[in-house]
Length: 480
Image (cartoon, rainbow, N blue to C red):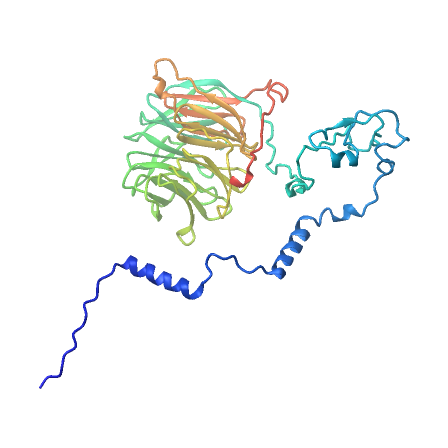
């Protein structure tokens, strides 16, 4: 016979929030019964806090209290041995200070002595001012040491000006490269031609054809008589300058090639393109040695270092990557920029480089890529090209035709120029796509969207008196 069954009372369901609040209330009742009362003061803790504050804030002025006051101060403010009348302002007598209210103003004491002149003191009279109702205790910020700005002062540079405009291309001029002997330079254009110009006179010497799309990259070897070109036709070509013809073609890119660079000491060519890969080629055998893949967008700038087997690439995915050619892997990735990195420039002497984006121009150290500082101004445009010479003059060209010149050491912008399009071109064609200094660093060549090539040089008549340096160090250096 079955036993009696117990009837369970139905439990009212409660929400999770209600249960959490109930648990919280029980915990507070258990561990903190006096919630509204202040904690019991601890005299020992208060003593330690006071002694620490005295030792940290007043230890610098403690020796000053034991020093003997000067003789002119011992004679008193109303002494008879003064050197004639003074215009110094002094406070009234102590009795008047105790009894006076709003009448305790500053009065002129005709017999107040003048402090003797010492080194570093000016001849102006000292004024002691005490505002009515102010506290006699000085603020601790008044005792802090005032440190001058640690920002480096920029060097003076003469302004740059255009002295020659070269016409000859039928399309946008996209790239430029100088001959190591500094006798000629070559330019590539959207008209699918490569033109070679004389540096001294600016005359056209040679025109070569071979690409079927616009040309985006050029490089001239300092170890061989070779010139390399790359374009939107996915091809990378090697030209023999003695025969003026193509001797090698490098196949492997899946899309247009946007940049290329030669290693200074190795027979290695690096190319980056819209397929998000930087490819390493052997110049002699035409074989692809490595494929540096890791970017998420177009690789539009690349350079190598002669001292280390290191490759630096900039991409439209806003990142800069450091690659090790020995192990074919990424050493580090810089994510400081917020926009696409379209141009980079390596200093010819220092171990650092600058990268340009639409948000800012930043400077990094090599080989680890430590961030140094930003440039002190913003060009506020898409920067397509950068170049720096040995004198520390950084030139940047923007999509709106603006050419800015910077001091490399301090990041100070000392000149802002605006290019003028040639007659027959639209105002929207005032864009700069490539910049390069010659071997001496005294000439600057810009390739622009109005189908012209402009040559710049420094103004020989400029002096620091005619063009003074207008520099203000940044107020908050912690931002950099």
